[in-house]
Amino acid sequence: MEEKITEIIVHMSHSHQQMARVMDAERQVVVRMSQIVHAIPDVLPEFDGVPGLIANTGRVNKSVISYLNVIADLQEAMAENLGLVLKEMRSQDEE
Image 1 (tube, rainbow, N blue to C red):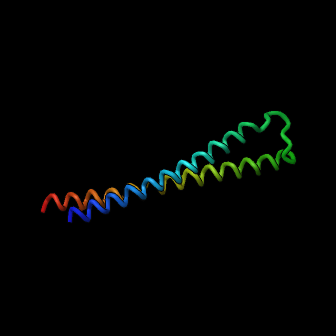
Image 2 (image 1 turned 90 degrees about the vertical axis):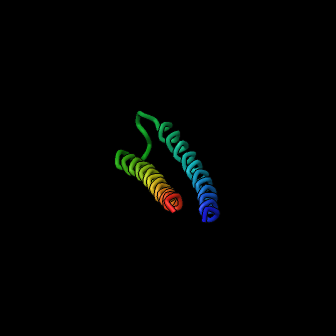
């Protein structure tokens, strides 16, 4: 049974590595988006007036919020997986 638990932990480790790679790629996207937003001029931007500026700002905000939601979901999934493994390890120790 310990062998199976070890295999599960190894597979989880690999999946967490892949998720970390995805998160790093997403982080790079967010960094680039923030650089773009920072480059927007403070005076008289040319976004078809105030309504265009508001619309573009809303799109950027939605993207950042979506990114943060995905990270939260990923952390929750990782915590659930780790909780199951720890529970299984505890039950093995009790036996």
